[in-house]
Image (cartoon, rainbow, N blue to C red; front, side, top):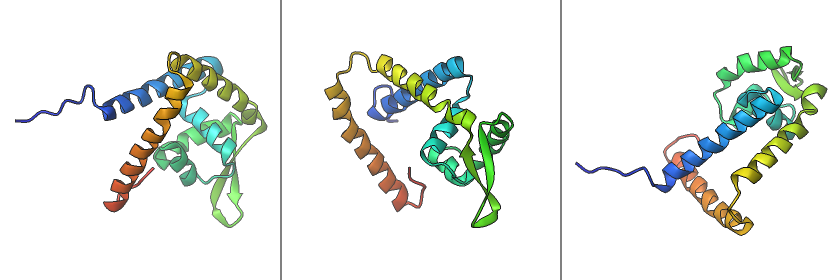
Length: 154
C-alpha cells in the first residue's frame, strides 16, 4: 500500500501556518480586548462592509450562517452590533457596527499589526512579498477545481 507523506507537504504547512496565525490572533485579541474570534472577525468585516446580511457576513468570515445567530444575539445585547430591517426586504435584517464596536476597530488592527510583526520576525519584506503570488495562485487553482465540480469557492 502506498502512503502519502503529509508532514512536510506545502499544503500541510499552509494549513498549519493558517491555524497558528489564527490561534495567536484569537489569544491576543481575547486577552487584550475580551473579544472572541468570531466577534472580532464580525467587527472587522462590518468595518469594511457595513450593512451586510447574515448570509453575506457568514460568507465574508467563512462560517456557517446558522452558527452566527447566537453570536449576533450576544453582540447585539452588548451593543456591539445593530440589526436593522433591510429596506428592500423587511423580512431580512442588515447588520451594522455601533459606535461602541467601531471604537474597537483601531485596537483590533493595532493588535493584529503588532502580532504580524512578531510572527513574521526573521522573514524579510521581500521574502514575504515573494510568497504572496504563489499563495494566491494556489487559492485560484483550488477555486477553479471547486467551481468545475460544483463546489463553493473562496
